[in-house]
Length: 95
Image (cartoon, rainbow, N blue to C red; front, top):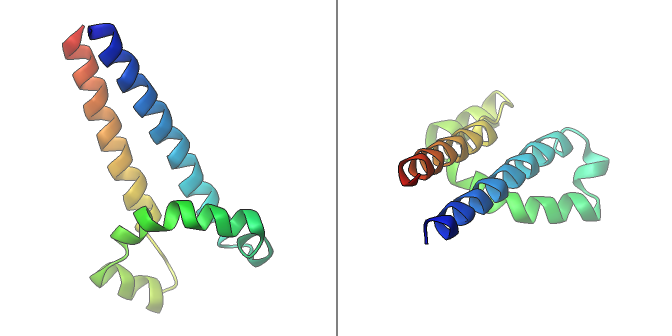
């Protein structure tokens, strides 16, 4: 049972790592319009935007519009990092 839980935590951590890479790739493609408007860019945006959009509210949205700096991907990655650390701590407690 513990091995199953550890394997599940490992898979979740791996998937979160892959999603973090997708967030970074989406941020990079947003700087390059020809990539952002491509089929891959639009698909990537559909995968990432629902989660990253959660962090683009209120004051952060105002900064993104006025200053042209969107920090929502950084906050989204930070939350993923915290979740990964909590899962890792849980895995170590199970051992």
